[in-house]
Length: 143
Image (cartoon, rainbow, N blue to C red):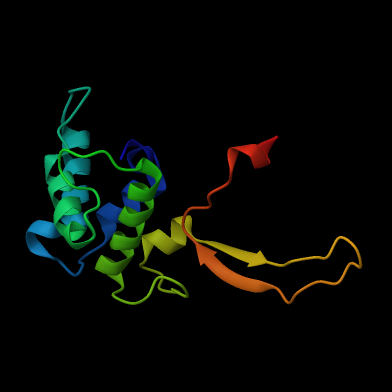
């Protein structure tokens, strides 16, 4: 959450949104806004993220992911939070979102084009466009 908190443009955009599709106790959007409000008002170095953790656990209980008391992948959690924020603002599929109010896509979405090229003859496939919120790269590919 510190990643999102330290992005001023994200914080301001989240604060300025007038409404969302609320899911009550499992509303990740409300939990995130509440946590950001605590960050803004508190002088504590660490704050409890219980409401956000409960909302994540409730949202993903059918998939048995992000459950209380269990470890899960932080990058996958971050990506799922971004997707859920999108769904709270624009309740449509995440791939071709063009809504100006969708802070997930306005601030994080990347248009990626995948294309294969044959090393022997140089032939290439047609570019395959898709949108990603988080781009995963193997650490071995960085060297």
